[in-house]
Structures are given as C-alpha cells and as structure tokens.
Length: 399
Image (cartoon, rainbow, N blue to C red; front, side, top):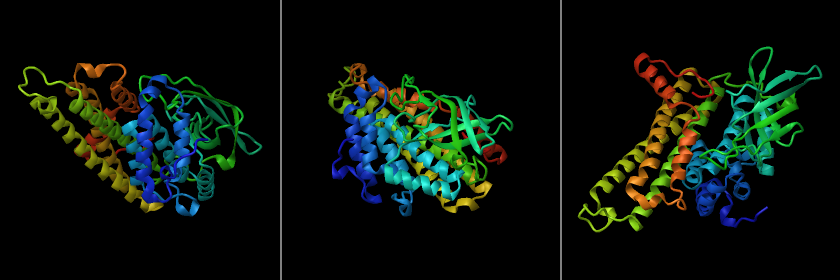
C-alpha cells in the first residue's frame, strides 16, 4: 500500500476539505490517462483509503469523524471536479453506510461502522433495484441463499464489502444484505467499458448460491419501510447532484484556463485576445449564472436532508416529502446545467480544443453517462404534480 504524506490524511473533521483538495489535485494529474485506460483506479482508491475519508460520515464514538452530509458531499464535489469516477465510488461508499444505517438494526450498523473505520473498508454496490435477476431463498437452517446476476455494480471491484439486493421468490419483495466481497460464490466481472465514468467498475456480478447469514440481512426496519428509511434514495440523488455540479465546475475551470491561455480571438471580433470577445464573455456569463443557481439549489437540498436526518426515526411522510421536492428541483437543474456547460465549453475554447490529447470531452461523456441513471423527466413530473396538485413525490428507490 502506498504511503501518504501526513497532509493527505484527515486528523479531524476540519481537515476533510483540505485533504480532499490535495487528493483531487493528485487525481487530476493522471485523469486524462486513466480515462483513456479505463479499469480499476487501484492506486487512487488506496490513497482514499489511507486518507481516512472513508470514515468521514461515521460517528466519532464508532471510530469516524462525525461528518454531516455537507461534509461528505463537499468531498464528492471536489473529487468530481478532477475525476468523477473516483467521486462516484467514494460517494457510493457513504451511500452504502447510510443504507445499513437506514435499513438495518443498531447492532448491525454499529458493528459495520466500527469495522469500516478500523480497517478502512471500501463498500461497493450490487443493489440495482431494477435488476431483479438475482433471487434469494430462505433455507430451513436459518440462512439465505443469493443466486443470479447483477448489473451496474459500481465500485464492487476492489471493495471489502457489498450492499446486494435479491428478490424473494415467494413474496416478490426486494431484500438487501451486507456481504463480504470475497464471499465464496461471488464473481465480479471487468466488463465495464462505457463512454464515461470509465473507472467506476460498474460492470456485472454473478452470485452462485452465496450463503448470507440472517445477521447480514437488512430486515429491521428494512428497505424504504419508514419515512426515515426512505431518505436513502434522496441521499443517492444528492450524490448525483454534487457529482454533476463538480463535473461542471471542473469543465468550467479547464475551459477558463484554455480560453485565457490558448484560444485565439476571432478575426471579426475587433479584440486582440479571446477573453475580451463579447460573445465569449456572454457564454461565460451564462455559465456563471447556471453554476451559481445550482450551487444555491444544492445547498438548500443538503440543508433539508440534514434536517430530516437529524430528526431520525420520528420523521413524518410530509417532512420527507419536503426533502424530496428540494432534491428533485436541484437534480433537474444539475442535469441541465452540467450537460449544457460540458457541451458548450468548446464554443469558448475553439477548434484546437478538440485535440484528442486534451480529452476535454471527458466531462460531457462522464455527465452524459451518469445523468441517464434515471430519467429526469420523471423528476419534472413529480415537481409538476406538486406544483399543480400539492402531492409530494412517492417514495421509491429513485425519488
């Protein structure tokens, strides 16, 4: 394992942003090369392990840093500015910690939180509620058996633990478990080769008669069983919002540097330098307006989530509904803003900026890949139903 400088390790909660920025700067040095290569960013994942940031959201009494959602999502956004694949796997790690907190019993999440902090575990994904090819059978001896295939298993490769779901055949219910990645019967495939998010290892997994003990099943209170447990999809959506915002900010920063240092003024502009071109300035003005608006919507949504999180098990359906509205609003804005800015940066950088070695298109490819996670049109439908009919979005794994 690589040795980090002391400045790259979080010693207290106040260090989190500084350490994230230092790591992000390091990730940026190889982001282009790694985007081209794809595969597992093992070295960078180990840097995150050693940084202590995997314990950011774990309570101090369980070995972590008692970070709030603002702290976690700030790191997600900072990482996404340089490399949204690493932002993705880091963010999903904390989503999975939230999953066992929301779906599991105190005994379960206390134990897993302590082990995660102590051993610097990375949690990976094998949940994907829309992929129901994995089934679970209860065995008379008191354990469960998972069998089948899963897709979009982001961060599963090079993880120590998995959050996995399977359909209970008799009832049709989706059951979720926390399983060691090295458990016999689990095979992870290196078959992720998409246009964007190329180092998230979001490929497939096979479960072949995998034994899962009752203590590893998240049954109490279980998935989406209460308004509080139903915060899980809203945390996931806020993760995407901060990834999209970070990607847009990263694209903006690279475009700005290129415009100031490389872009040539158009011969009809009557200015000497591209950064004085009135049409270029107009584009940058629009970029700024979009980013500032999204930042405010994002902060509002994070504050709503944190307030609901602090209420805990007493959270009401209406209070949960208020969070879902704030998150859906920010998600629509984040999708539109990130797709627009990552595409339009070429209008302010010029033809030479399309040189393949620069890979400025990686920002658009990453955000285009991730924005298809769930159709934004359904967020607009939910918002329209609230605006017209005063109905909160129904809780699901995507809203």
